[in-house]
Image 1 (cartoon, rainbow, N blue to C red):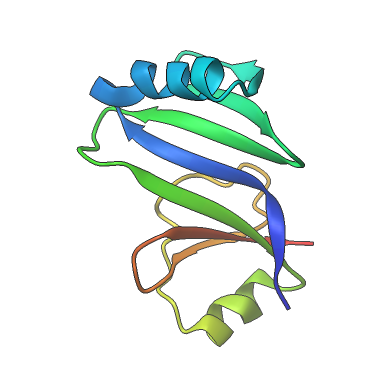
Image 2: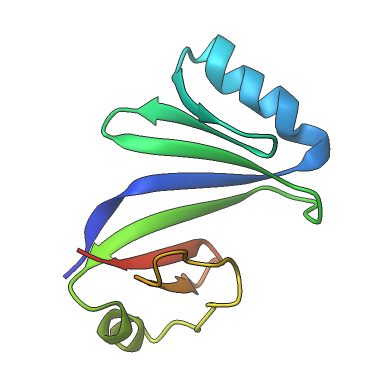
Length: 110
């Protein structure tokens, strides 16, 4: 019912963001594919690794994307909390939730 999605996001506190970006670009050697003031994207195999600066955070979070035929059914199956208030899904195609450890999951239609 679930497949890995195309994106992983690392949500980083503002005071650690620049250092984290340099780490992935210079030390690990990932190719930069997109950049804005508060977000960069690297090619990470077949996945895009986003590193987002979050001014209101004090610790780092990992957010994963999962593909599923029906995000609503998947949310019910997982019994996970509805966290749709986290971030706007621009195309409206998905639901936000989290696992028991608090890792944020984006459930997207295949």
